[in-house]
Image (tube, rainbow, N blue to C red):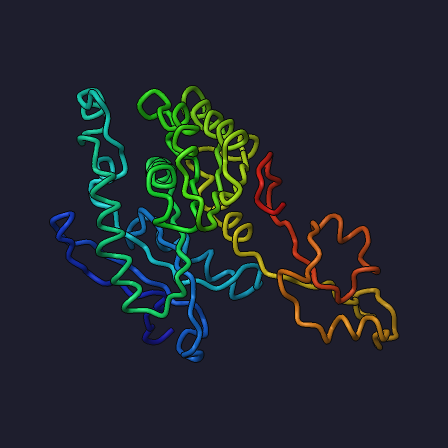
Length: 326
């Protein structure tokens, strides 16, 4: 086969943190067009547990899939390596002893971790790369608990929160039980979004998530739009991160699409010319504002009426409830 060459998808940097008192590896994937479009700025998705040996590669693969199917917007992916995640993603508790024994690390590091993100890492990323000021954070399991706690305690840190099967059993389901109190103090300014999902979890893990959903249903302010997508019929705690990260990206950053006339080789009409109405649709640039929300199933049932119209597909599993998309 001859000599091979590395296939490079991202760049890793070793950065020092005064807050955390050590070094972390930060891995950055830039979207296509970043170099070729020097005036374009991009949103940033911060991936917790995002070290090269952790979840970075498979989430970066999802980001790269967008370059093939254009189903969501481009973004800068920043993988944040976790070191002692059971300390930094676990909120403080009144009695840490049983948690320390069970997890092998004392809880209570979340406040320091938010300081590291807000005071050191995020300013560093904004200075180094062409960011547009829109930031998201994504995490799974204990990292997703950190996502939920951050949304409740320091909501202005990010614009979008993606919590994949958060460990809502923590501290007797504290962040489900107390969610309504936190939401009562939610800032009136700004626009925020939450994507929440859970697998076939049991006991306090699922009950804690449901308590959070109850609070969102009854107390979420208008400027916090949210969606809850349970997938307990098809995913386990160990399998849902990859498919639900894809669903989250398509839900939060979905892009318009079109239905095109099939050619004769596909069984379509021999006449390839568009009608004046169809040509007018083709000549119109698709935006989120002028696109018709639909599902792939609905589009297939009315395809001939939709040729070349701007469509915003609701892809993936159906949400159970929420306000996102309304």
